[in-house]
Structure formats: C-alpha cells, structure tokens
Image 1 (cartoon, helix red, strand yellow):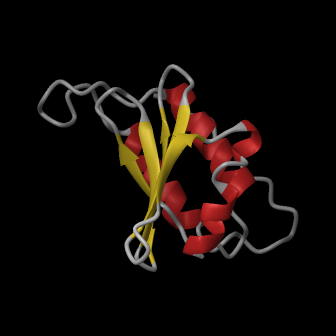
Image 2: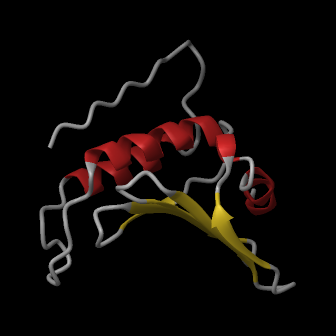
Length: 129
C-alpha cells in the first residue's frame, strides 16, 4: 500500500516526536487484512493520511509522541497515557474523528467529536505535556 508522506524541512530541527510517529505509521501500513487473526481489515490509507495531517497540525515540536494504534474497522487511534491522564483520538474510515479524555486523579472524563480544527482536544493536549 502506498501512503505518500512529505515532510518539509525548512531548516528547523525535526520535532521530538517525528521518528516515533513515523515508525508507528510505517507499522500500520504493513498490516494486511486479518492482522489481528479475527478478521480485522487493513488500515485505510485515507485515514492514515488524515491522522498524519492532524498530528502535524496539533503537536508542538517538543510535544510527547503519541502511540499509534490500529483498529479492527480499518481505522486508527493516536493516544497518550501520561501524567495519570489518557487522551485518545480515533480516526474512522468514514471520516469521523472523536476523542476520549480521562484524568485518573480527578476522575474527570470527556468524550465526543474533536470539533472544527480539533478545538475540543487542544486543552487536553496541553494537560498531557
């Protein structure tokens, strides 16, 4: 499966998360149908591209790298589990993008659509930094 990826180097240092994220997405691209042994579909390349674009838009250069997790419906999730907080952003093949946030200390919990330009998750991203 070809997934075009372009990184424009403007003479700046690569983000700290760059290689980890690139490795995570490279692993997704190699998954074939039935990658989980239970009939899961290979990860949709359009979904991969949407998630890559979101990461580039959302993450500051020094942000912690998310884990990249395949989903059995051919979607994917980017997630952070830091500072006793969890933030998960799910990208589905039908274009839906939703989030889940949980703080283990305060038991604060939120979920829903990410909103235009990911406005509903920006504050939670700051909390996990």
